[in-house]
Amino acid sequence: MKVTAVSPANIAFIKYWGRKDHKLFLPLSTTNSMNLSNCLATTTAEFSKNHEKDEIVIIADNGEEKILKKDNGGKTALLFDFLDRARGFAATQLNVRIISKLNFPFQAGIASSAAGMSALAAAVFKSLDLKEKYEDKKELSREVRLMGSVSAARSVEDGFTECTFGETHEESFTQQIAPVDHWDLVDMVVVLKKDAKKITSDIGHKIAETSPFFEARIDYLKEKPEKARQAILDKDFDTLGNLSEVDTINMHAIMMTSTPPAFYFTPGSIDIIHKVYEWREKGIHVFFTFDAGPNPHLITTQSDLEKLKSEIEKLDYVDFTISNKPAEGTRFLDEHNF
Ligand code: PMV
Image 1 (cartoon, helix red, strand yellow):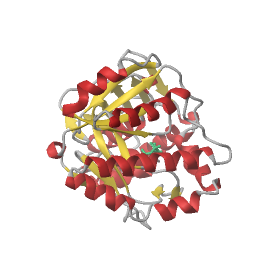
Image 2 (image 1 turned 30 degrees about the horizontal axis):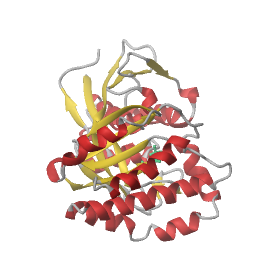
Image 3 (image 1 turned 180 degrees about the horizontal axis):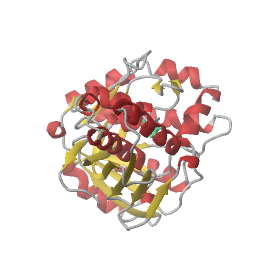
Image 4 (image 1 turned 180 degrees about the vertical axis):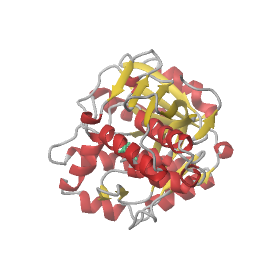
């Protein structure tokens, strides 16, 4: 059966960086995020005796294609392991064809893996008729986490979500904090012209514990997810902004002090941080957060979006921006990619 699922990328407020367990991909602490309405992966999967081998192709919005191969290693290898696991659940040996379309460019530095992996898992499970794996979002999120990405697990539920800390596989899953229409926040992804050297998040999670500040981060994280959760529920922009900015700086401090150091900021990233402080002085509701890359995500409100856009237009090091509202999580579509 041919099945298509769509899933959003997301932006974390309290970040996942470093793991409690590298085999089960258990995050160090609960991590929360908002799904992004304009950063979507739409993925079709079909298992069939007509497919001579597994084929996975990702196509970006400009038509650029990436063919994924098991020997690419990292998350791609884990993806092929996932296919074998899913075949095991369904007791089938059929090969699969998967085509995933992104509605944003690869160079946006947006974690396309979060959108791509969650959509892929749902499409694969449904095409194998594994209801217990795709109808229950908790279970779907556990499986997505095992594909090697806690951030992808957060995308399966609608709106504002969290992937919980857990000592075991069962205990770490995604749940909703608030639905899509709870809060009209906007996440503007600001794509800078200069890219930074890339250390993949998979390597980053492994080297995080080499930072002398790693234990301090674990300690600091104790109450933060709960505070951010409450700020989301209360629609308390300033509290969420403060928690998020402190958290992203804290995470980048771990990155920069790991062995080897993972240095993602470029001069533009630092300049934007200073600009955000200035814009706030002028009364614009805005805070910044960064993933494992140089591009800031600026969180603002719908009512301040135009003001923020006109400030961004003045910056010559900005390539383009993508504005996102809170979005639904993983769901199925009737139209297919092939
Ligand atoms: O889930 P991964 O392996 O793509 O790691 C995500 C890492 C960050 O984007 C930097 C933080 C986060 O929580 O999204």
